[in-house]
Length: 571
Image 1 (tube, rainbow, N blue to C red):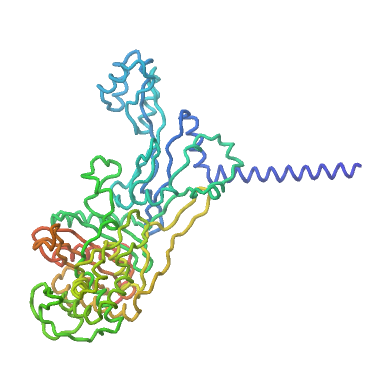
Image 2: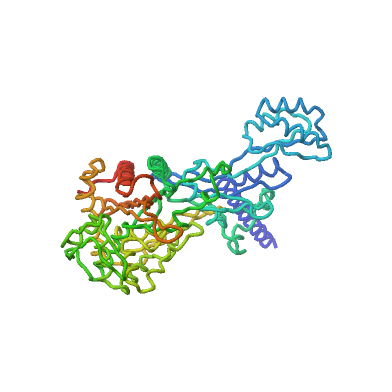
């Protein structure tokens, strides 16, 4: 009897100990591991008991050293309101408040006169310091309520990529552009849980979001490097100012993984002051949502298709007559000049339309169409940005030789800048079509993370083809660009590059005689590249060729990246 009683007591004690251990473990998880998270919730409960505070996950940039820098986060502050029924001295209240923060006197006095309204908002987004000072006045009828709002610490840096939030229906705030929209389900927070008592969370099922059909809440960590993004933005702004272009943009990406280190275009906007935006179009991301005829920047891809298919080799020659007639249409070199019998290298070095057409016609329409569609032309890239536009490549399906001839040098087909960069990356990475991405990782609120790694994609041509075209593009820099632009020389580094100058289509048909889209890409070190850099601009004024406007800006970025990342020389 005594033994049985002792056994029961021991079992009960063991159960109590286990229960205590579980409680202590749970408290450690909530108070230490996620202490900041729940302290904020408790703070919200008691400071603003009338309703839930806005909350949302953070979007981070990542420095080269792996440090996370908030690009979109929550800012804490206060809203100032009044209860007109309790304001007995409006003029005195205004004077006291205005001495702390400037407020609109007419708005304040008008609000104070509304005696039938118990709540009139005066201003919002006050700093914590100003809110505390006003609260310390203890003025009857003055209400200081805690407020949270979306804040973008880096301002316009990469704004079109990061995006913004806005009202969907009623008071619900959702992502409307960029990553804010793409990862809205992850960044969104359930405001109904904001005021839940802390200890009610103690034994809550943290796996609920994983089984109720809702995406787990988390933060988005991007591959955007803030210093690289800043340098790109500065370069874009200076180049646009110099040439007065209508639009300019750039992308810096790892051609092997598709990780995007910087991506932006101008005109843009400040997400903290979106009212200053010139028009609604600046909220969209033209690098993924717009398509353009890219011009001669496509010639290296035509060369790769010709070599990989066996239609030509690097040593093949052809008779360049300056102009040819295909399906009754004249196709000419940019200067109308014939070069005679020359090798394939000169098609890229001198950017010859007749030479690119020769490769296309030698391959034949079926082969060329297969390669160009494999490059992803006419498809979306799969980038984690919303509203991506697929290229317009209908001219590759109707079988007319002239359409293939013009497509060979980037006219008659329209593709997005990112579509272009992805295809060109295949030359840099040995023949694979990567999936570009901005997010590197999702960090979940309940613990754990998910790495975003799309992996290698479709092989579009052989490694030997990529190596051959890379050597040809290195020659373009060494033999053509360096002598013309001595200031771009990057000693001891192999750099592969090509420019593109495309005529711009006119709305009434045909092309403008004096409006061009300029583009330029480069990757380096060419045989084992860390980066591919791409820039374009639309309608730069009083200049014709991309080599005149984009060579220096792009190579300045190359030099910056080499120094910033301490990239060792490869030759």
